[in-house]
Image (cartoon, rainbow, N blue to C red; front, side, top):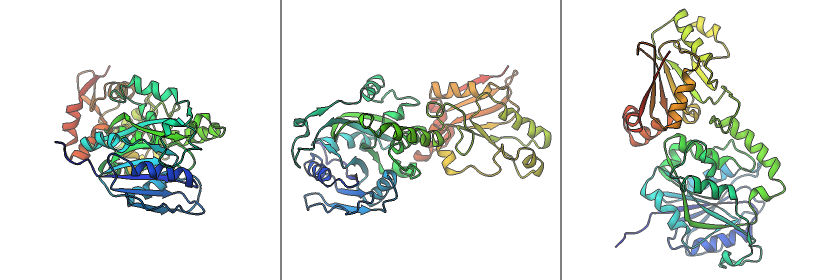
Length: 396
C-alpha cells in the first residue's frame, strides 16, 4: 500500500485575469493529490484577486506594477508557499485532475530533478470553472516542443541547450533545488526568458531535466509564437538570455564580460613576467568566452591587464552561470581550452586535464555541473568529477 503523496505548494502567476484564475483554482481544488497550499502571485493588478473559499487554502501576494515581472512574482509566491515540492502555473493554464500528482512525483523521488509538464492549447473563453478543457475548441500545440521531447526521450537524454524545452507555466522543482539556484532571476523584466534561465542554471548545476507527459494542463489561447506581439517579445527575450546565459547556443558571439563561459584562475606561484605569460596564454585562446582573474595583488600585473582581467573574486552569479572553471599552471597553446571544452560538454565529464608534450600538467578544466552536484550532496567535488568522468587532453 502506497503512502501519502508529497507535500506540494502551487504558485499561480496572475495579472488582471479573474475569469481565467477562477478556472485554474477550480481545477486545483479537484486534484487527485491536493496541494497543501496555493499562492496566487499577483503581478500588480489594479484590483488584486479575491478567490472564493474552497477546500484548498489560497493566499494572495502582490507586488507593484513595474512592468511584466513574472520572475519576481513567482519568487514572492514561492516564499509564501508551503510544501517541499513547488509547482508553478500561470493563471491562464488549467491543470487536469492528475496534474499535480504526476508532475510532483519525479521531483519528490529525486530532489535534483526539474520537471516540466505537458501544456496543450484551447479556446477556453466560454468554459466555466470546473468544465473539462478538453471539451473546448482545441488550438495547435507547438511542434518544436513535441519534437524536442521526442528527440530527448522526455529530457532523459537532455544535453547542452535542451533547457529551452522547459516552460515555467507547467513547472515543478524541489524547494531545496529552487533555493540552491537562487530562484528565478529577477533581472528578467518583460515577457519570457526567466524559465529558460532557471532551467539553464539547473542544468549547469548538475540537476536533471524531465518532461512528464501525464502532467497535462490546458493553456487558454494560442502559443506565444502565434500571437501578434511575439516578434518584439522574442527579440527582447533573446537579448536578455544572451547577456546572462553563456552557453554558445544562446550567445553565438563570445562576450567575455560580466558573465563569462569559463572562469580562469592561475594555479601557480609564478610572479612577474612568468605570471604574465600564463595570463597571455589564456587571453589568446580560440575559445574566447573566457575571463581570467589576476593572482595576488601585484600592481604591475593589474596595470598591464587593466580592463581585460578580473581584479577581484568571482561573483556568485558568475560561479553559477559559467560552464567551467580553469585552473592554469603554465602557458597554454591557443586551441587547448576549445578542445577541453568540447570534451567536457560533449561527454558531460567532470574534469579535463590539459598536459604538455611530456605529460606535465598545464591546466585543469572543472565542470560547474559537477560542482553543483557536489555542493548539494555535501561531498568533495573531486569525487563527483571522478564519478562523471575524467579525460586528459595532451598538448602538442
